[in-house]
Image (cartoon, rainbow, N blue to C red; front, side, top):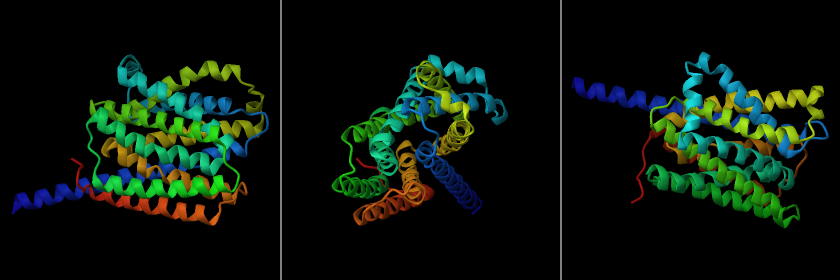
Length: 313
């Protein structure tokens, strides 16, 4: 009886830990969802490369600065740059960020964000299967499939209304692939015993270092304006430093595939902000797609919280 009680208590604690991880990822996704609108509301004279590079440079520096207060070691974080997975995480962090802002600029905040983050779970699930040997669970397949159908409806509704941009879509998909590689590389480092905060600081510290030359080639006079500085600090310290601390702690306890499905809360937030703040329009078919994304998000959240589901053969 005592062993049964202990087992039940352990199961409850495990479930509570997964529940907190789900909430951490959803909180991070909410902050991520403000990035496109923040750029759109920023001062004139910005470029996608300049904004994306500034975000990662500031955010990476912020993560390294607060790392000791989070219980991590800067020395251990920087040492990850000499590992294969640490290098991959840093390089793909820089890649997906630049492609994301380019995709948002050409495809719009709502569709650019949805296509980037919507493709992420598919790419991440496949890469996790190939590189981490994490077999996708049936719950992930169902939830992700529902979300993908919703994304197809949303993007299709925008394209039929004449607001599509093929290059913007391709940049958004490239960003989703880079994001998937970054997530899988980070998860591999955590599986090897590295702390989530150190992994996030290493990835974004290296990503910022790689983007520093890009930053120096862009017109950056806008950052000296009050609105430009406010945008850069929000994107760097809030949507990167704070958000990726939350993201990393969620990734620590959840498989990589379900985490990227939960991050589909980001395009929902971005879409609502695009409509309510920027005046973007979404046709009726697009709203049906958003409803499906929300349904898939709810399914994945419930499955992740319970920690059950059948693995695919």
